[in-house]
Image (cartoon, rainbow, N blue to C red; front, side, top):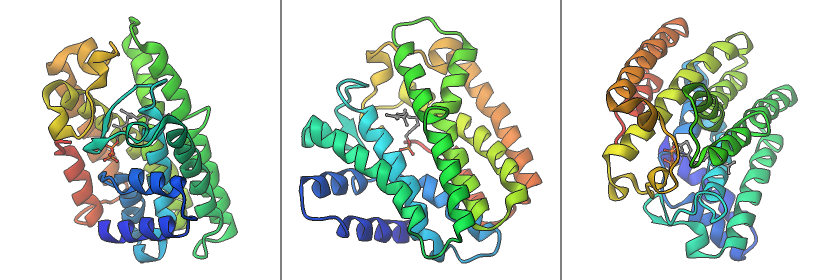
Length: 280
Ligand code: GRG
C-alpha cells in the first residue's frame, strides 16, 4: 500500500508545471516519511470491506497536508530546523521563499485533491473537507502550533501541554481515521474513530518526546530541536518513567477503542502495532 501511496504522490507531482515549485514539492514529498496518515485512512476503508486502491488518490491529501506542516514547522521563523526525513530541510536545500510557497501549495492542493475526486460522492467530499479543515485550521493543528511556539522558554503545566499535543499532533491523526470512515459511509462510527485517533495521536506525540530524549538525529532523521529551543515536552515535565506510564495507559485506551470498532486481525491492526513499536 505504501508503494501505491508513493505512485499517487508521483502522479500528483507529475501534474505540476516544471518549476522551482515543482522541484521543491517533489523534494519535500519524496524525501521519505512513514506515510502513516494516508495509510490509516486507507486501512479504515479496507476495514469496512471496500477496495482501498480506489481511494489512494484521495488519501494522499493527508500526506500533502502533513508535509506542508513539516515544511512550515522547520522554517527559520518557527523551529529553524536543518534536518527532516534524513535530508536538509527545504529552506536549506532551496530557500525560505520556496519553502513557504511549497507549504502553501501542498495545503491548498490537499483540498483540491478531495474536491476533484472521481471516487467520492459530493456528500463525502463536503464531509471530508469539513473534517480536514476543522482539524487543521485555527481550531486544530495551526492552533496547536501557536501554542507550541508560545511555549518556548515558558513554564507550562501539563494541561497546557496536553491541549497543545491534542491540536498539534492528534487532530490530523483523528482526521485520517474519520476521513476513512466517511469514505466508507460509516457515518455512525466517525466519533469512535475520532476517539481512537485522539488516543493514538497522544501516544504518537509522547513517543516522539521519548525518542527525541533517547535517540539520535541520525536515527530519527530530524533535528532534536526541543532541547535547543527550550520547549517543554512530556518528558521534560514528567520525566521518562511517567512518560512510559502514560504510554501504557494510552495503550489501554487504544485497545478499548479497537475492541469497540472491532479491529481484529487486519492490516490496520498491524499498522497500529507497528506505530507503537516505532523507533523513528
Ligand atoms: C501548521 C506550521 C504548522 C505546523 C503544525 C505538525 C506540526 C504542527 C509540526 C511538526 C513538528 C511536530 C513535532 C509535530 C508533531 C507531530 C509529529 C510527530 C510529526 C512527525 O510525523 P511523522 O513521524 O513524520 O509521521 P514523517 O516524516 O514520518 O511523515
